[in-house]
Amino acid sequence: MKTATIFHQGREKLAAVIEEGKLIDLALAQSLKKGTYQVPGTMLEAAAEGSYFWKEIKDVTAWVLEQHVTECLYPWNEVKFQAPIPKPVKNIICAGKNYTEHALEMGSANDIPADPIIFTKAPTTVIGPEENIHPHAGVTGEADYEGEIAVIIGKKGRDIKEGEAGNHIFGFTLLNDVTARDLQTRHKQFFLGKSLDTFCPMGPVVVSPDELDGKNIGLKTYVNGELRQQTSTSKMIFSIEKLIEIISRGMTLEPGDIIATGTPAGVGKGFSPARYLCSGDEIVIQGEGIGELRNKVRE
Image 1 (cartoon, rainbow, N blue to C red):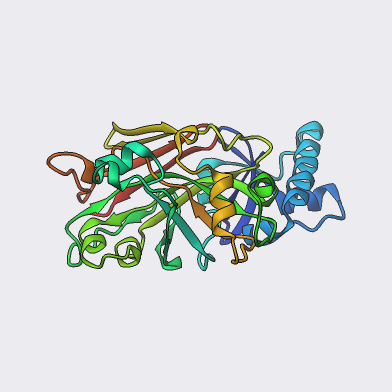
Image 2 (cartoon, one colour):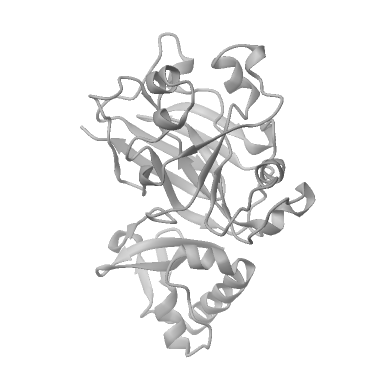
């Protein structure tokens, strides 16, 4: 099951993605069905409901399709996809150098972490699909892309064991951890280099964990049509479940928290010479079973 935050007829709505190019307005569908379930107004509220949300929207989606109800169906070209959890998002927690080949391209074997490298991005970085990335030319000359699989937390928890981590996942989406490499180097800690406005495109949909195996999601990143990154989550140093276990040690993860699970080799800085983003560049991140996240650098 896939759901998305869309903007349609002047307001944000939750929609179910039923097939390529077609959506169901969930609140309208439930109203037509005259069901008792109250569809959440936001993805953040949906995440708090967790598996109960997925169960209920599967039911209403099945009803729409079985009864051939068309009043609540929209083609994609009539709506604007938003970031799944639009501003203000909650925590954006990121894992650095979580693929061996990326750690090597950024340094040497000494850069392969024995423990996860964890940092955060400011909530003001978030933008949705098709929105423009600001190049911030007066601030950085080394803007770089990082295609990633992101996890949205559903069930609240602390001290979560690896074997129980799957119960706390609301769903999967795509994220571009855009990074100002010069700021990242200059300030040592990653926060400023990761947190310029528009430096966290997300979307386009959230996929339920029962539909997608987080242990083996294919991931590709293209820049101007050129394949730059290609991997699978099976190649992570620290699995999604292990990241959740480690991050939640002594710290409560709440519904709507976002964990970006790391980027593979092929970032701009990894080339010689480096191939940083330029105005007009288009970055497309593809996630197997998720879709594609497409953004351009503003000219």
